[in-house]
Image 1: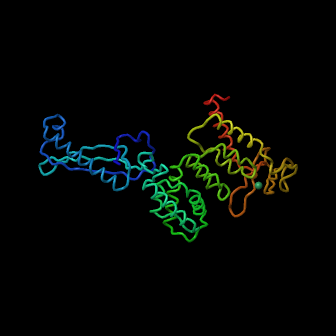
Image 2 (image 1 turned 90 degrees about the vertical axis):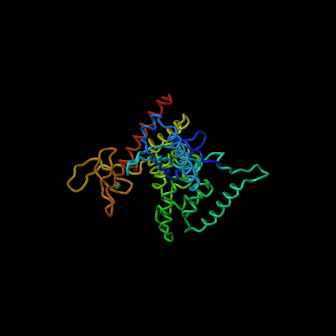
Image 3 (image 1 turned 90 degrees about the horizontal axis):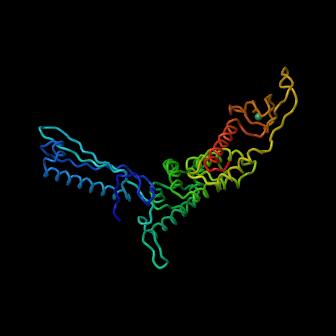
Length: 352
Ligand SMILES: [Zn+2]
């Protein structure tokens, strides 16, 4: 399979799975005439020489791409540069492009028709099996070579184990793992998820929202995995903080069905049960009589109706900030922003 080389940034019918590296190939051509003469067409001989140099640079670039296991070079750019020195003019032909790995049926050749199996499919599945066995050890995290295979062959079947390991590393609950492998996990996990299909990636991420809700919400944000259906299945008051934290994440395309479900989520947020309550009383010894908020943490503070608790938390954790629904000012702002997004979406989808 030859390397596809193009000046465009994408390739029709193929998806870029991974950006490998920026590649450059330069060929120096010695001559005694100026580049301007050349372009004026004064010398067929030098034009010929230039073409040969261009071809040689192209060949070098192709070899470099093969060496780093690329399927294509995108964004190819050609540069001609004149160099003066020692009474001679030389010029340099430089080609620069980005080597990429593609995800397309023609490139993968990961095939079986029931009667025969391609070698690459056999290799791929062997790698997946080996890696799954390694991952059974709770302290194991993929090393550089593993990651290369995971990304090159889209080893998505081990994604649940990798996600679990990612959460442990992000929470620093794993101790026996080399620092380099933790670093590799933090670098590669997001690109790995992004390379997956939307539903496939969402299945993995939403399978565990309790181990570290904020970390999970961050992944959803970074990978545009806002999934109205999955969020709607979590509409319980105990999940409210997680739900609010993903409200302002996105997905790449919204449908009328999404909007319908997003309104159910809005309705859930509008009807959150009270976790605190109001009492009539006086704050402190010299305060005025009035309405006091007793938040879910049991603090009492004098606030306006709908206001947020002003008590300090222990050990410098800041202000409590919960309102009678048990949510903070920042969360109230996120809900407002979500409502604005719904209004814009309704308008775009003509669903007022
Ligand atoms: Zn409080």
